[in-house]
Length: 465
Image (spheres, rainbow, N blue to C red):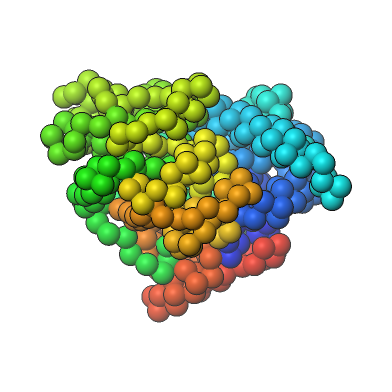
């Protein structure tokens, strides 16, 4: 039995792990690497051969850094089933098609812009919507806690990881000879008390091996309970300056949490009445998927729904779908909140909102999620004096606010609580989905609790005895 760490190893994006067993091979996630544009294009377009030959795949959740390369996988010849929760399947139906459209749009734009550059090689999308449809046809929805057999001698279950709608930990019981070993892939772990979705569950014991995310292994988030207070502060301060709040937000999870919080603040009379624009066709569609899965909602959200009849819609919230309506937002003169994808500010409509607003000191760029290295989002978090948007450098005069209260990732204490819940008999933890400076302090803390823990590098294969 062996695990190959093919992505999100000592980095945060590009989740991809291959479990090699006597019975066959199981691919866990097949996500996009997000970083420098050329490196991303190279890595995402060249899947390892052993991945395309996997027997089955299991998906932890729908975020693009976990699911985004599934159409490439199928296009490359993968014929197996792709197991996921029903909510993850429904989200992927929109997210992967949106990914295909963005790739086509970006390729068209760049090919036109650099058509006269003799050193420029034309860009082609990694996949198109037909490839997405084929991938969706191979997906199999399985509810939480319902055992299924991806391969003979392997029993799998999904447990709720509390990260986004439909996100899951994968629990695998693998029989080889007279032994059964339990392997847990944590996926992305959420935080207790986040709005809308249920809190993370702990996997059942006994456990032999855990492949665990470590995005925030070196830091603590501020309290979830401060979320609305900080959001209110940022909005009020920006309105006093006569500016706009521009929010790069993932279309899945973060956008819905923001809408929920803004709705709650509005109902409490704590916000000035300003227009709120959700400028992302994907976010609009994803919000409809949320409405289809109330079984994923926590008790607080169900109570809010019972009292107000609507979680995501209210009078000053406007959902923008057409490109024409999106461009009209450039002409806004009055204060407003604009929420747009992509979450790391690497593609999509958020780029033209940033282009038009970063140089105005009245405005606020509100960061509400993790920004990977070498992304525009990370450069904004670092408050670089100049940032490049669509190849043009612009002065960063807008205020940048980072609200970690909105993070959907477990922090250091949450991760250590997960370690404790896995039990003292757990033989080894593998830390993935994190940068080394976050992983190393977490590794030391886990070792101090008496566990063996290892940080694999990308491409490394590790035997499980």
